[in-house]
Image 1 (cartoon, rainbow, N blue to C red):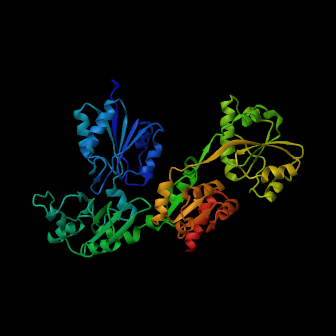
Image 2: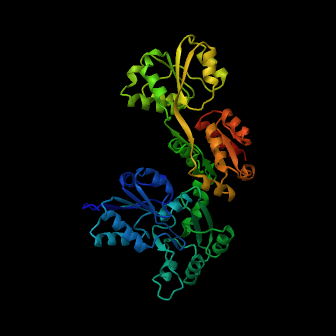
Length: 509
């Protein structure tokens, strides 16, 4: 145990949409030694944590408590006393029904320093994403935040039902789904008109968001019909009537579609971001890992003899990354490449090369032989020496076509793709419970590894109602060889092309 005492940061993790996290909160997560997070804090935020940070889940869900509040308080004290800086992630804002005040008092009593980083509370964000402004000049200029946990029928209640009922304020109840019927009865009993508009917003700001509206008289039955459960907030007041006009989030083209991303986690951010912005609920289950090859000697040898080559051809962003990583590790830089000509397959690979200050001389559009021949048709390739750093197991068409054109090709391994089985149990569970709408495949290895995860399971049965989307014909051919007929194939073989094809498919439906 160290003499140094760490600092605990009581962080508002926001209402669910990871994009609503504050910059200061993100910086604290990135530097923390320990991250302690709640049920309502988005797991995506854990991606900001250091790889060596200790991650501790202390979620409380409908009476199922991983740790009691007292034990959570003591955990924070204990970790800080051990000298660790702790990021305590709490859904919404830590001081809005988040028990952050209790945690702060406990830390203070033990001499532990702390900071409070406010977050976007669901009391504001969930209605906003549902198209409900909680204040509006034509309707109301004030709002009340009320706990929905307290049993409205108990005799010693602190709830001022007569005040709530007669007030023109927007009433926002947090965590009150189980008490909805009693809340409604008490408001009507104390004079609130039974035709007052009311809305419940579940999982607000996320792609799982559900909104049920009605009046105080009709809402209980409507919520039962919709089978709406916690976590949800309740909004009561005339501003709810604006939802029909102002709803925006649930009108996104892919809203609510549960789409699995099988790409390697390090490369999934672009696809995840694009689909999320369109309203999709993205589920990351990477089936591959991109790693350095076990034997780096061939690549290092090629770089050592780089002056002997005339062309450097990259087939993927991974090839670019691992080539330059190795180049720099060997103590060299881009100056040794000044005599070379460059070719990239695909515009994304071309852009990644440009990040290193190099503009590709030619750009074959696809892996197809015709495209390669066309791209090199205007240059003299015969007897030229070509270095091709790429995946360990890659299609042979490119070196074969270049060789036919008279080039001398060195096909060297720059990286390997390996099976990632971490998400296996989650994937099978989601498929068995019909909780997946679509699966995206961005390479042949994502398809083959995906099928490996299913093992002896009946893949056809599991995928019966699931849309499968392929980034291009090569990936589609691999899928077919494994008895998967893609429902969608991107016309442009890029991430944006895949997204566009998904959009066209769902808009067509």
